[in-house]
Amino acid sequence: MEITPKSQCVNRTASLSVFQETPLRLMSRQRVYNDEYNRDPNPEKMYLGSREYFAEDGEVWTLPVVRKVHRQILNDPTLCHDDTSVLGQSEFNRASTALILGSESIAIVEKRADSIQVPGGNGALFMAAQFLKRWFTITDPSSPAVYISEPCWETHVFTFQGAGFSDIRRYLYWDHEKLCLAIPQWLEDMENAPEYSIIVLQVAAHWPTAMDPTPAEWRQIAEVMKRKRLFPFFFVTAQGLATGDLNKDAFPVRHFVTERFELLCAQSYSKNFGLCGERVGSLTIVSRDNPSLIRIRSQLMLAARCTWSTPPHLGARIVATILNNPAFFAEWQANLRSMAERLMLVREKLAEELRTLGTLRPLNHIRRQIGLYMFADFKDSEIMYLKKRRHIYLTSIGQINMSLMNSQNLSYVARCISEAVQSGLATSETAQPAEL
Ligand SMILES: Cc1ncc(COP(=O)(O)O)c(C=O)c1O
Image 1 (cartoon, rainbow, N blue to C red):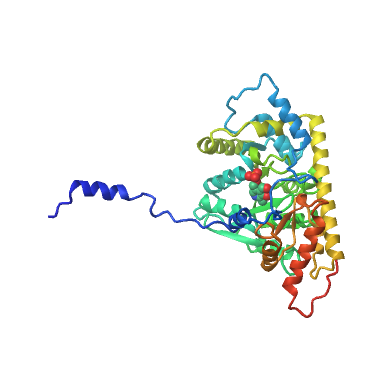
Image 2: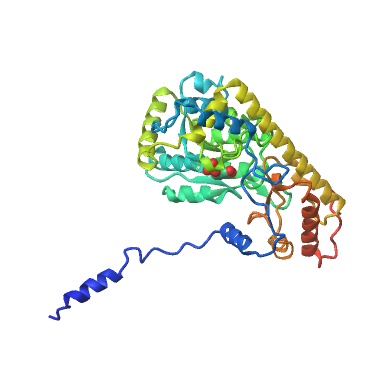
């Protein structure tokens, strides 16, 4: 038998990595895009795809009420960096439940609703996906299908895949031809879904389309989902920032509660409090009865303990202080209204500029959009034109953060969009100025 010298064994083992089978994950389209922006040496370049709300002066806006409360917390001599509980601050959790469900909600009265504090909307999504994978057992032994809107925030797909769901399907949300929501196809997709599928529903300005169903359409969706025993998992993107009205934005969740659905609801406080960097969010549970709620909470507590131990303090303290103090709450609502109204105004101005320029493609649908973004449903060639020829970078699927439009740049951006559309249609003989 040939004996390998000991020194060779040691060397060969040392040169092997236990991670040698780990594949390189290609950068997402958005990251490639951001990278190109960072490397673009043109001093006039513009990035219009940011996640924050910017004021008219082009600076990220800290909501005045958030700034005030933050200062008050930091000046509090009793402030210490003690540990929170695993499921977060109880005053935050109570206020979060009331914010989304309404303080008079039947589910609160019947003690079958509660929230847990989590690090941002993505934290809520992660926790919900892990919990559903483990304890959504009605379809046992097979895993339930998860339906996510098409198009969607891709992280939602990755999070459910990461939790171990293998049957991830899409329901049609957007009609590219008619440039509106694909309600008939959406309802048909729900009709065809297996019973007890999990349906991810975005509320308060759908990402990326910036359009939500009307209350009447939500009622239709709830009717089909109830009949088909489909489980609603809501993701609330920015309550209050979509329409400027907290109650209007919460309508779909409250309607499903009235219809006596069991549900989970993830809430992000990143945009409506301007706290992207503080990681504040909540996961609300509405269960059949109080004993179920207690059991669900106990499992979430274990999951949270093994994941982040306790959620971060400061952002949640700011949110809880604002939600629980009537004067701060009123001020927050006024701040939200001013943001939402400015977004509507800017959107209207952009639509009007595009109309005046005789833009050769119908972009009228942007007038019906809500929230932070504008989704024109640009073609790839148009996004490319803006990037290569005008150094204007949108999100990779072509959204524009409306708060980044101001009196300095709106007309210029409108002209560039019009050019981009023209460039794509240059060869078409039939192109006519669009009716806006
Ligand atoms: C649809 C959607 N999913 C997930 C997130 C992530 O939320 P957060 O930044 O609070 O983690 C957002 C943020 O705006 C969102 O709009």
